[in-house]
Length: 395
Image (cartoon, rainbow, N blue to C red; front, side):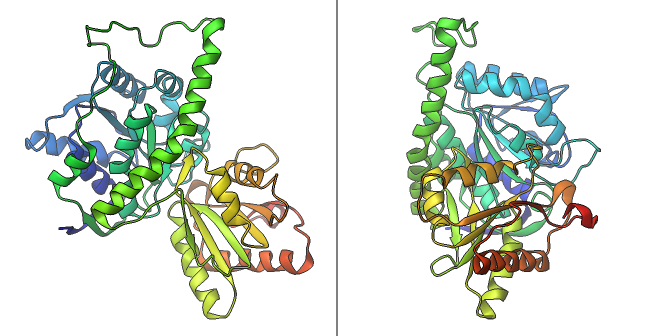
């Protein structure tokens, strides 16, 4: 029976960690993810979990701790944000190449500079090519559910995973949530039993040796294959989670897309504001829809393209800037997925919300209006745009 509660996104993720009862947590605090190890350390102090909590001197050391623990055969977790994730950068690639299934809660926060502690997706999007799986939550409920599912997905694929939520918006915002009983969570994730690990004396192995030229590329190809093979695993775990909770998940959520003429593609908590705009415009008779992407790595290229092709024009929303002069990271991947299709929609990019800049229902109204103009004129115009910038020269 579901347990109804009221908690922040950080507390919800810490609760999921408690219920999983991992072997090791390496942690160093950074705003806005600090509360996750804080709450979790209280569970340890109160004897509610058996986890070895290792408080270290930096995020680089936190990831090093998790890598050592995972290589030794332990279920390892951590949490970080922004500059903390950046300090781990070198080790993100090492953990992925060593195929260590570490679960990391990422509370998304802008990277400096200028220094900023508010939400955007520049931290995890900057790490999008490091070889980690990536999942994003719209709500506190999804942050909780994604972490529990992420444990299984990561271990089944032998790839580390980032379970992301928006800093302050969900991490500190309190909302109603349905928890699963502890016993059912532990039954769902099971006991981590890796096939090989450093302490398994029957099969001695090395982890992270020097990769000389005749072997390095094969390692990368195996990582790429593991990422590809994670697609059915994600859906299989989602189906099992639905059987457990009744809550349904996939690579993305389609909202009012059945007869939509124009749509948004968006990640994270801003999808909630976008849905409110959809509801209001639908009440006015406008056929608008929204696609909320949940899984960014692996990128669900084919199913997302099929969903976008239901409409005539689509706005792809990026809460991160790639400084490529060709749009943000989500835009480039989503638009690329349409390349081989004949009846593809016009696709334009909006950079929004950098450094915590609010996006409103009225902003989404303006975007949908732009899409209808594109639809009516059969012309996308400038495909690389900003929304919410005060300086009119740069809109």
